[in-house]
Image (cartoon, rainbow, N blue to C red; front, side, top):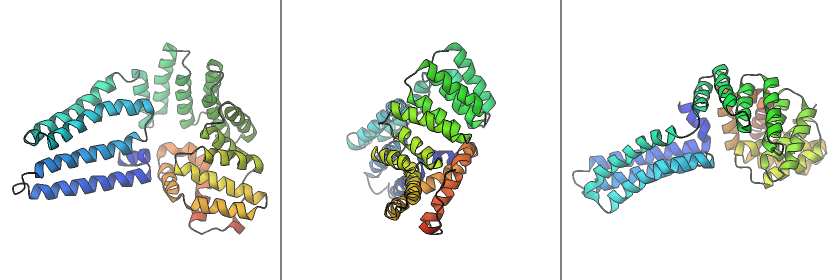
Length: 334
């Protein structure tokens, strides 16, 4: 459970969460010792709880989609407000408000969860978390039979097929999604990733190029295309598209890390030692991204990622640790 939570948050946010928990927890314990001598100690403890909830909410909600973020805000915000009001305006009722706030969080989880998503999705997610991909695929297939024209269902099942190592089935589902939603860069991106996973670089390039043409403003499309161009040793294209992805403000350090690695290799292939050195410097500033990859790669569910990216992550690690230098760096590709 802790490892999954760490993967979800990422190393930097997880460390911040641990620090927040430690600071507020220790401060609350110290106030508990002097609670009999300081009339405001109880109110201060409530404020510390509100600070922890607010800080934890910020760290966690930042990793969620907009829809999930709104749902959890509806659960957490009333509880935090209740605790703050009690601590600052009605300190003699602090205990009552804290209890009500925590009670709302518990109740809200069930209330909002009961309306969120079909049961087949919930069963599929539970099975996926247990590593039972066959059961997860069976559940989402049942949902597809109910709603055959919903492209997102095929996308989810395609991801499950990828985790199960059934790449041809994943491709078929992405193609079904494309038929339902012709202008969907998401499906072409997914198809490119499956082809890349299978080592079919030219087909991966064609799908990624289509995705980029549809959504040039999306960093994922530019990043995927640049990564595949690195495999094909198309250095100019890799530099163009990876630079575009970075300019679009890639949110995760782990993706920026690999983007700089691929840029480094592209510059080396072109004999541009200055550009390669700049890419290396930028890559070394993404050490938290290396930590993220190391945590993610340790998960049982990450075997598909390991097949595609493990060598890149290991080489980035060696470069960051100065165990490799530019003179010995492999330029990658076929």
